[in-house]
Length: 205
Image (cartoon, rainbow, N blue to C red; front, top):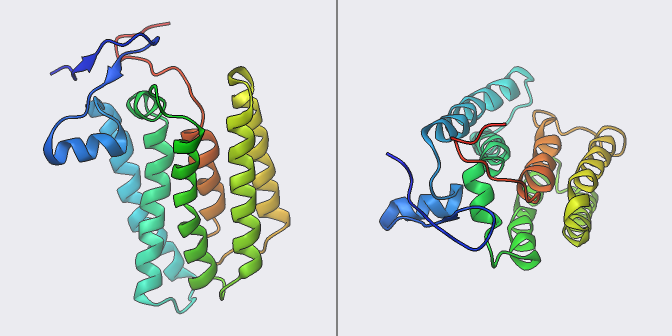
C-alpha cells in the first residue's frame, strides 16, 4: 500500500502523519516510511543494542547493569539515528517547510543529554569532556546551518572529520564506548542536519 502524501509547492511531496500511536511514530521517523526503510532502521539498531553491551562485557570493566543498559540504549539510538535520519521519509519530515535553524538546534541540543550521561557514568564525571564535546557540537551545528545550502554537505563532512580527529587525538577513549563519538557526530552533523533530496522509491537515475 502506497503511503499517503499531500502535494506541496516545494520540490517534493509533503508528508502527512497518521493518527494515534502511528502518528507518534511518524513524527519520530518520518511519515510514509517504506518497509525497506523500516527494516534498515530497525535490524541494525537492535543488533547494536545486543552487541554493544556484549562487547563491553569482554573488556572486564566491572560495569553495572545500569551502565550496560545505557550502552544498549545508546547503541540503539545512535545506529538507529544515523540510518533513520538518512532515509527519504525522515528528510521529507525534518526538512519540511517551517523547519528552520531553531528546530534543528533544538533537535541537536536534546543530545547534550547523551554527552552528559557518558561523561558522568563512564568517565567519572569528566567535566572537560562534557564541555568540549558539547561546545563543539553546538558550534559545528551552527556553522552547518549558517552555511549556504550548496555548501552544507562539504562543511558538515569537514566538521565531522575534525570531530573524528579530536576523538582520536584530543580525548582519551571511553572504554566500552569507543564508538560513541563517531556515531554521535555522524547522526547529528551529517545524517540529520543535511537537507538532501528525499527520493521516492520509484525514482531512477
